[in-house]
Length: 72
Image (cartoon, rainbow, N blue to C red; front, side, top):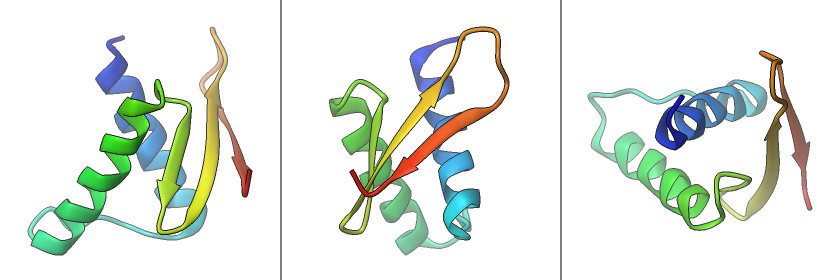
């Protein structure tokens, strides 16, 4: 699995966790998604910033579930 695929999967899980969704037809949602993705790529795919709230999202090798730790 490529790093971008992992980041996309983590963003999707994080958005589900916080109760948000992305409408691919909404320009503001795409901008929001791009901001989350940009921060995640700069942090190596571990840290995610949604608004002012940071989250650590960890995947374990061989596991499907992700560990999401809010408010670092």
